[in-house]
Length: 339
Ligand code: ACO
Figure 1: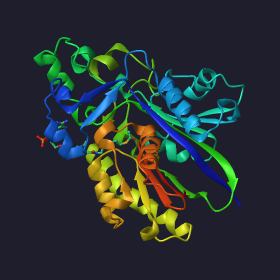
Figure 2 (figure 1 turned 60 degrees about the horizontal axis):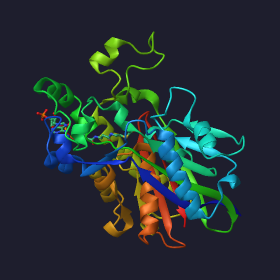
Figure 3 (figure 1 turned 180 degrees about the horizontal axis):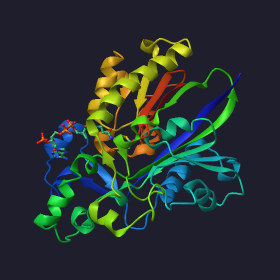
């Protein structure tokens, strides 16, 4: 039987490591609050000018290298992101150009945190995000510890308005190389879902063609270009939908959840993943989390976690690995792989 196999993985982060303490200089928050509520200890932000397609390029090169596949062998690109370089065109074609490839098909997918799971069918699959463009501050030198001016009290109060979201995210790109191969190893099955009913629980109200013009000065003044989030609702969706879809993908493929060797969940919040783990009754050694070091990097979290887990020896040949994610939209899904 022909199955899609993951041949190689790789990732890169934004250039600048930012610890919680630096974020606490910008707004009314603390390292303790962020760790306790989300698990995040640090994240990376890009240098101004580094784009999502640049992160995708770095990750793709590492994944190709890891797979022992030359860029010219790639015959399809799927690029998952919610922070594309431009409103249009998408990042897939830009990556094709940056990799110096021929005119192969290149697709962008916009399933936010579930983007990577939606794309697990093709050859060079990239998930990358530059979330720093959403951040409601301009004090980058201050955050990066380069001595810039700290925010005034008034600016701090403004930034604090968005603190529930901004502390969670970071910039990074991850990639993997997929290829069909005969045998029992590879991707066994998928379960994908979407439900747009609650899309306003996590979305960017401005900068879209639901309004005319699609962006205005008042949008920027009022912060309508920054995601709005009902954190509690998103949390509740994640801790119910993710265990459900893991059970679904297992049962449709004739596998018991307890037979899984490793669960790699989207890294949105450590508390979410701990609750998913409890609901599925999986022991710690069967779950891989790394949000502490990168924050939520949306479409990049799963390939980054897979790359780290593989390189830490947590994914052995023949292991049964399950990927699961839920993101804005809502879109959610799970995939089952025999390593
Ligand atoms: N620092 C300090 N205090 C804060 C912060 C912060 N960064 N953010 C919020 N607070 C305050 C709130 O104002 C509130 O204060 P109050 O009690 O005086 O009103 C208090 O902390 C508790 O706030 P809650 O919203 O109840 O905190 P909660 O425990 O729900 O945690 C969080 C908030 C971390 C956002 C959580 O709801 C969550 O993770 N939700 C899911 C979010 C998520 O996963 N988003 C990404 C989805 S993926 C994608 O598609 C992009």
